[in-house]
Image (cartoon, rainbow, N blue to C red):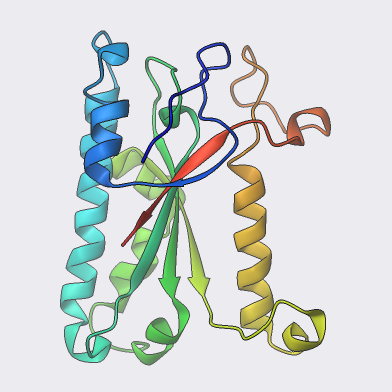
Length: 195
């Protein structure tokens, strides 16, 4: 469920909120707040096409997946998940099953996976700025359990980094400025859709 946005700041309250694509469309595309938007419908259509491309890759790898899912979750953040009337893209983090990726190496269709992670190309093709993170199972978050397994430590690091990143806010008149220590404080929420 998507909570009400903080109208003074234009963002979700701090935190990660599980939701559905239908709820996101209703709140950030169809809602009266955006009836004058000239970009939201096109950005959302691009995102839906992008996620359809993920489904196509999964379809090509059906035999190798053996009932497992490639995509596990999607985090959506940035200016699209705010009151900004005309965002130019949708920022997403896609979590994929690392074991599935390894089992599919060298199989027809795996090239599509690499293409879907190419940020500049996906921005041009779909108006989506993706970051793809391989999910790896781990028993315990304690250092002694993580040391020596680079895949797991990378997953833990990137998951934490993106959780931190999507909760930051740039100054209002500095759209693409570099983050500073002052802007690195968690100030907004973001969304998660389970794949």
